Picture (tube, one colour):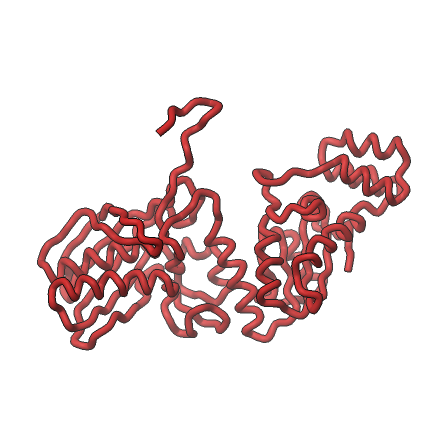
Length: 362
């Protein structure tokens, strides 16, 4: 590993998904039942073939089976489940196959539109397949012909779920067990992006034809007040405008409203699909150029280029009668229309810090 210096900071650490944690703990508990041996670490194989060793917090027998737990390590990703105890309780069954159950802190699906049927525990397909593959291999190793009942839980998961989109998606009672590769990539925000896609899918499956993708609470409140949309139609996209637009290219709805703060919308207008400050910045000279195209004089352009913030540039433009908010929304609309199908009616709204509309285009 290269040395850490101010110019070359240490690389960000990868972590493991809740699906990997569930796989490791269910395998350890099942092994205790079949081999009579408790372990403090277990090796699993991830979907792309990597072998990883995962440490356990406990592995012990219970009255009706066995249980094992591990502390979720998300690496350097700001994951809501980082540090949470993920556990599996396993019981043997005469009926072959693997059956999954939601334990404490794991949610249950209550709405159509997700990858799982209504009534199923919120354990996604890839983690289910990972667990099934490992348990089938274990059964073959020990000549076991019965099945497994696997209950997955997350300590404190019901409270943690309130920090996610699960309640809005109709996943009640706790978190989802997630993961497609088994690995959490730092700042990939893959779980958040997946929840955006799920939010759109749930809305479509429940007959909603008009969705509003919003950057935060203020823009959600503005859309709710303006259109009277139900919560299911409000998609909390945060900084991930591209996640919304690209998903609608594959799974379109009839109408999309996008709403965000003026600064965020100005980034989208400039062609950025990730609106976080790590990945995009506000281009004040570009705002001045658009203002010039709308008739702004040289003095206003210079003042806008020298502004400290996009809000200051907006205030300067509006004071001179230049509709900068509308201009930014129009450019953002062009970016969106280049991505979504022509069948989707798209409109853009920009708000100020008080949640008031300062721009619109359709």
